[in-house]
Length: 333
Image (cartoon, rainbow, N blue to C red; front, side, top):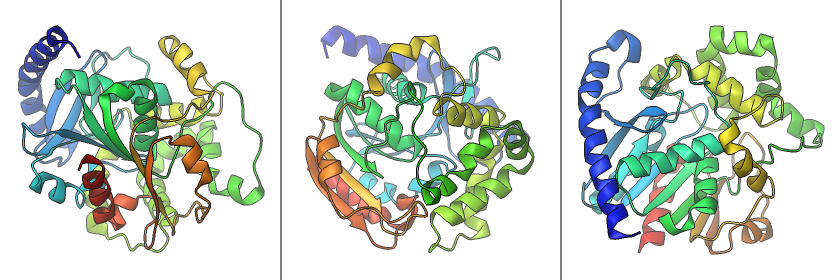
């Protein structure tokens, strides 16, 4: 990155953070709207006010941790301390539709196609003045990390891909899978109906808790643990964002015009050319991962390691946080 661009990003970051400080204070004071989000910061992009937490050294090399659906930043609580102790700058954002993150314009469509979630990562990094960074993500967050690595490899020092390669073809409808695989995706078919949209609106916490438990069936989630994340799902855009994401991926609603070319490129499922570690939970409710590494080796051209993790379900950072932090430390040296 040129010196001029660095100076521009640093200046933009200072302005954006300063402008967001007052807004963050207002958000913290609106307990009924936000719930208890603790010590959050806000930064403004062209589309969003993104809420995030920051840990470790403000001058350290940045690591961005990206949660998925239906989780929030609390999934990373066990991953953060070893990274912060090594003086990394750990940035943990709430995705669009979660927690304190808000759209700037009430008229902006509440879209959440994969390209939009990935663009949010770059917009966040630009707003914070981050030239390069490392990424780790699972579920939606892993998809965003994969796409960011594909489209902006010069900015991604390393990636921990929890669940492997997750870029979708949103241009051509996929073929039906076997009965067991289709059954595991019941929530996606449900969200593609009007009943499903009403159900998520009315029963969001029941649905989210059920997905937590079925996607990590060997893990015992406490009410206290769920209570720490549950305010994130009361975001006023949560339902619209989730519904659009699952309808768009099955080619049932259009995405944003500005992402059409990007989605066409991603439909080719291009490989990832940044140093990567792939982690797969052996006790995922989506089924046990294959022991054959060839698929991950084909998708991740600079694969450093592929690990099948005992005792971990879909939200692997919750159950085996040390595996994630160790992978990041390994990649970053």
